[in-house]
Length: 238
Length: 303
Image (cartoon, rainbow over all chains, first blue to last red; front, side, top):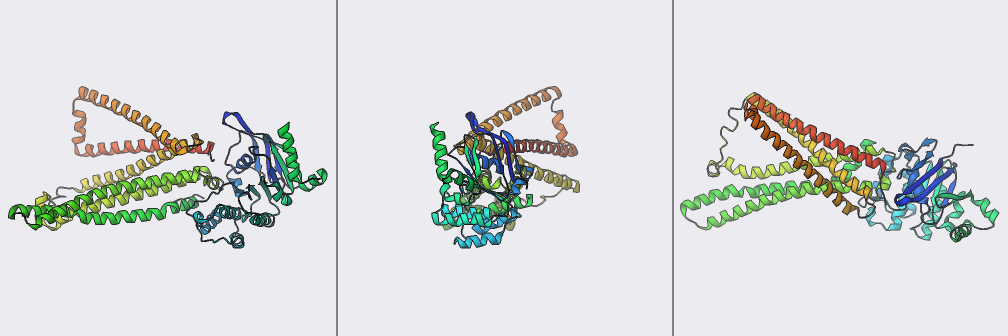
């Protein structure tokens, strides 16, 4: 069996005033999997991605990426798409391509150029002139044009129109390295569930349910979207 | 990776800095020409006093007015230019590290210390370049004032300027002492700029990581706090220094100060003073830098 891409062991994170966001969470992702990290608002999905990408430091527990303990070096294997645009408004799309090409050895510029063309985005355009949705598309293109081992996509389709969603999901499936893994967090479960291999429901800082998407659908006779509603309705009523 | 970070840090400010520096130099040259009106006006006024006022008086007053306005404009322009560049550097630091751009900055495969030192070196380069442009601008103003006197002995006489024997009596040893002093002074300038930049980065880092919301207000609050603490420290230092001086004079008389009157010891005394200042600024800058890096390693506070 191949080595897991990501192992999170007993991961805990709390913010001030004693708000526990992750509570000894265990999570493991095998290579070649697209995993949906699903849960209600504030359950710790984004916090988990920030911990994996190194933006936050865990209170306790460990994170291993590609067999290495998490550090700046493991960032070279991780392609992270945050929820918000991180561009400097004065930069052009082309300048961002240069930036990614300089810092990430695994960045495939020709692939990024093709994707920009497909989505009719002008590479000479300045970021400040682009709409919020277009900025999100550019950001996704930059992230997916890397040949990374682990893609962390925080709400990748949240701000784009339904037509672009299909393209983005196709891009996610079509462009990632089969040896790599993708973790997607989203509320739009119905839109993404067709691309998921595995899913994890996160609740109160723990993995409440983890499984194979197809098997779970077959076993419960329902879609992940409906199962999510059922599980979290129960958990809220309990 | 450091080179790549530095390349982008320098590029982020290059365009706006080049424009600002070009405007500053242009203004300094025009201002320098304007300032040359002051000595020329003095000459005109002198001749008016001798021959009685006519239309030339109006020209003299106008030239004097233009000269004074040019002088004031250059002083303000230098202040705005240096202050503006500093503010630009601080804003860039804040944006790259603590705004949404931090999501990109801190997910690069680069150590936080590398990111920090790249920002420090690029900031220092711009601060020193800004100082150089400001110095050249002030030189332009000075040249504007002196050139008419250099060209016309009459103006030189009216302005009370004498350039003859300016370097007379200057020995080779004096020149050497002066050169060493210049080098030490330049090192002092670099080190003070470093300490100042590190203090500003520390203030921004503390404010941005301490406050979840209203970070800008936080920066002002932390700045005021550190400013007040520095003032108290300065006051205490000066107080101790004053007591020391009074006691020294009381115990030894003015003999200690006489050391500075001896040629060689005088230069050495000044060197020693500058070296102490360099060491103090370097120590302060290093402490500020370490505090900032420790804070950055511990918390980013991205929204």
